[in-house]
Image 1: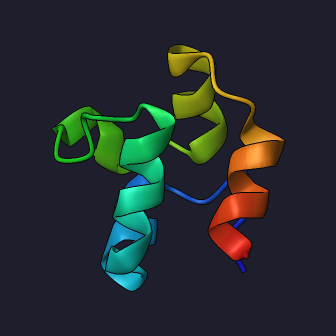
Image 2 (image 1 turned 30 degrees about the vertical axis):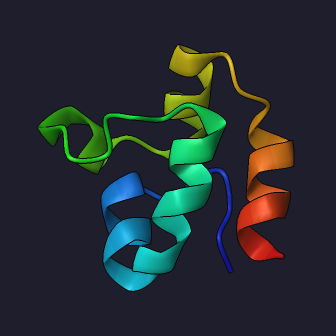
Image 3 (image 1 turned 135 degrees about the vertical axis):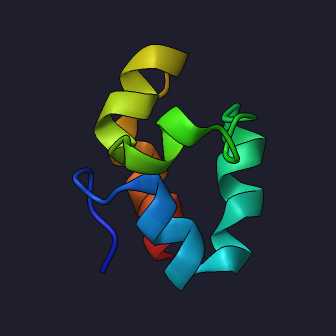
Length: 60
């Protein structure tokens, strides 16, 4: 299960099909080295995205 502490790099590696959801939410820097070690919560804070809503979408 994906949660707000999931690292983006781990998420993309385990669930590559979820990248489209992240891109649609406004996270366009998925390949950035810094993004690989960021948690969803950290990335959402930077991009002004509601982490709880994004986690819900990723787990749907």
